[in-house]
Amino acid sequence: MNFSEVFKQSNQLCKVSPDGRYLATCVQYRLVVRDMSTLQILQLYTCLDQISHMDWSSDSLYILCAMYKRGLVQVWSLEQPDWHCKIDEGSIGLVSSRWSPDGRHILNTTEFHLRITVWSLCTKAVSYIKYPKACQKGIDFSKDGCYMALAERRDCKDYVSVFVCDDWHLLRHFETETQDLAGLEWSPNGCVLAVWDSSLEYKVLLYSLDGRMLTTYSAYEWSLGVKSVTWSPSSQFLAIGSYDEKVRILNHITWKKIAQFEHPGTINNTKAVVYKEVERRPASEDLSLHNITVGSSLFNTQSKYEICPLPVQIPFVKPDPDRANPKIGVSALAFSSDSHYLATKNDNMATAVWVWDMQKMSLEAVLEQTSAIRCFQWDPRRPRLALCTANAKLYLWSPAGCVSVQVPSEGGFQVHSLSWHSSGDSLILLGKEQLCLCYMDTNQEDK
Image (cartoon, rainbow, N blue to C red; front, side, top):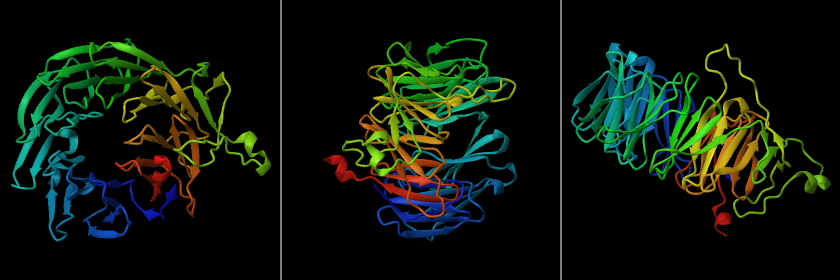
């Protein structure tokens, strides 16, 4: 694999356009657009203040820059650099700004979640949606861009409204059986809406498009409940991570639990492979003893992982029960693009990523790092997981094995987060105030 030079960025604001051709980065109040293949600067835009949030329109023609402190949104055109748009929410303030799926409307959420304002770039028309709920994930668009689900709070009750994105008319409005709705998410096929309660009550509800409740699922009572929820890309599975350090998998036919994945302190599973990161540098004659050479077509590089003989103890931290938001439970869940694997992170075992085989419904691998895991993400084209731990290394896992790669850059570049290019051929690595690109050797992979 190859690495680009290092570029500046602010607030981790760096995104590849949906068509994969451009890379947009924010440096304080400037927006820089580069060609993805050459990294040459194509456009440079200057905003009125430091940029808090940046996003591409779905057709890669426009870029939204939000300045939350000023209550401002500026929109820039890639095709017409002289064209620009400014939206000023004024004294009512701004806490969130996003594109609609058609890339021609902007949804602004005002301070205190008083309302959502829908601005049209084509007609300059303005619509208002009242009572949006301030919660973890209160708004979601279906994958086909046809519908928007919005969590609402009125008269001390939770509701969901489903809008048609073409003209923003209300399709369905129904009350949910939640005490304090925390989030909602469409299934990738757009047929089912998952709604979950706050961490004080374990409750997940599934609704059809017409507002019928298909099922309600609760694993236990009187304890901290749901911490993370995600659908598999195939829409066949709904994974629910909770504070009891377990992941429960619901199936799409009966909506019953078909599997439960636990994160024990000791791994005895004979079929699982535990990779442990080793930081020491062995002498050259010692390489064969301490390092594993992954002889796979995916990674033609020497790994700094050791395969541990079972049983293996995974380091864990006992959380303080008297403090709010205890570091315990499954906070991160991610399915591979083919829905074959599920990666999980249990917060009181911060240095480990667990990979589960969804066909066998069993543990496939555990990656034990020397530092806490900051971010992990699946390759959008193949079953390959990238992760980082805020050091100068990039880590990759595939069914063939594991590899640790040093990022060759000056000035101690540390990878705090990462994201894949839609082609799966490159990765954007983000540091605190810098970024660099990692290019995969696709010729090696195709052999």
